[in-house]
Structures are given as structure tokens and as C-alpha cells.
Length: 343
Image 1 (cartoon, rainbow, N blue to C red):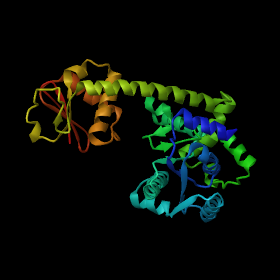
Image 2: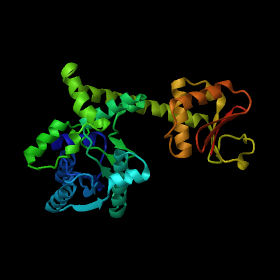
Image 3: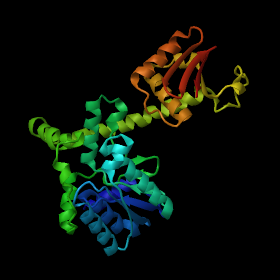
Image 4: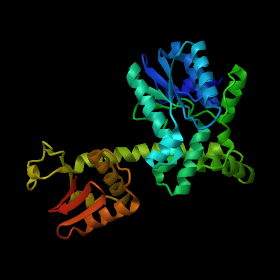
């Protein structure tokens, strides 16, 4: 039953194409061991090849036992197994970042490393519908934008896929029992140290008991609606960018015959039409700024609402030559009816 549900999710969101090589991140817990078993059972039907990447975080005493369990599971179903053992706590101290962030970075870097080694074009992670609901709640508590309500993307960058994203944790637990998979359980998931654990173990049970027993389903419906609306708005923003852009990476648009002042002498990333920008609704202006910064500099990380509001105000005023530096390495400059994004 669950395998058919996952198969339908894969097809609905076009996660997999024939001939794909997929690296599956497997910790040994119920979610990851389920997706490994399901993809292995579906591999002939989908015409895919799968590989397993496993990180031993060296945080808990059970880590070596979990690694051995995943190794043996892969040997039993004849799947190539790749492992990396690294002290995540020491790494987080060295990099001066949180343990969760360090662990996530290490995992995804290793997934990419394995993918490159085996020539894989997809990476599958075992996020489920409960994980998605928790992520949405985390984003709300942090003060998210509409974008944060969409939660975990079902497919990211055409590369990362989440085949279990429409399956609940209860369904996955039942599948493990039914198939006698005997997954390993991370006891730290029951410790209410991290925000996600508090949401999982305290907030969601409280919301279920006091407000809505189907709260996880409700949050996932909200997430799906937000994702659909985000996709629609993104198309509008992309079209507006194409309409307003005058200059990109020192290569002027062919249809624009007016040369900008001293373009060749400056390190301009993107130039937009200021007059047309100012005609837009604020919601599109905000998205367009983020989109342009992401296109120009590779990421919009670190750009917050206060920065966007300042840029919009700068464009509205359009008095003299004004600069804004919302983040190191990013300079916004308004002059002669144009918005310059400069490195």
C-alpha cells in the first residue's frame, strides 16, 4: 500500500525518469530505511539504479551499530554502500556553527560527493509529511514569509527528491513492522533540546489534543497551497525580470540599443529599468529584488525584509545618486532611471 503511494508521488511530481541514478541518504531510522526498501522494490518498475550514502556522526554510542546495520541491509539487497565517519560536534565547534547545521552540511556535501563518484543525477532524502508540518511550524515561529509556508520542497533544483513527502510517520512505522525492517531509532529525537524536537514532541501533540486532531494534515494542505501560489508568483516575477532587465553581467540585451554610462568600466551585475520597476506592486517589487540578487550574486541569503524595504524606498525616491549596501559584496545604486546591482 505504501509502496504504491510513493510510486504515485514520484509520478505526480515527476521526481524520477527512466535511467536515473539515485543516491539515497540512509541513517538507518524508520524513514530512511523505508525509502531505501521501497525504491529498491520499485527500481525495476522505475528503471533506476540506487546507491546508499550513510554518515556516522559519532555523536551517540549507538552510531557504529547503526552504521553496521545499514551496511548489512545494503549487502542483503545488493546495493552499493558508501560511508563517511566524522565527528560532527568537533566540526561544529571548529566552524562555530550549531551541531544541527554542521550535521546537515556534512550530510549534503557527502551526498554530492557520492553522486559525483557514481555519476548519479538525483539524491533522495526521507522527509515525510510530519517533517514538512514541523518545518512549516518552525518557519512560522521564526517569522516566515509566504515562501516559508511551503515547507520542504518535493523536488529541489531538479535534483533532490523527497518520495516519502506525502506519507505520514505512522504509515512509515507500520510499513517497517509489516516488512520486518527493524530500523534503528535515534533516542535523541525524544530529547527536547532542539527546536524541531520541541515542535514534534510538545507543540504538535498539544495542538492535536486541544485544537485539531488532524493538525498535520491541515498544515500540509496549507503547505501545498503556498507552494502552488509561490510557483505562480515566481512565474510573474521571472517575466517581470525579463521585461525590466537592461543589462546582465556586462552583456547588454540585444533589443536594447541605448548604451549605459561607462558600462565597460564598472563591475555591474544587473541593471533594471527604474521607471517600470516603480510601477509594480510592492509584493512583486520585493520578489523581484530577491530574484535579481539571486541571479546576480548566486544567492539572496542574508537579505532581509528591512533591506528590501530600504531598496524599494531608494527606488521610489530616485533623488540624486544613492547607494545601498544591504550585504557585504552587494551594492544597489540608482541613477538616471536605472537600478544598478554592483559587486
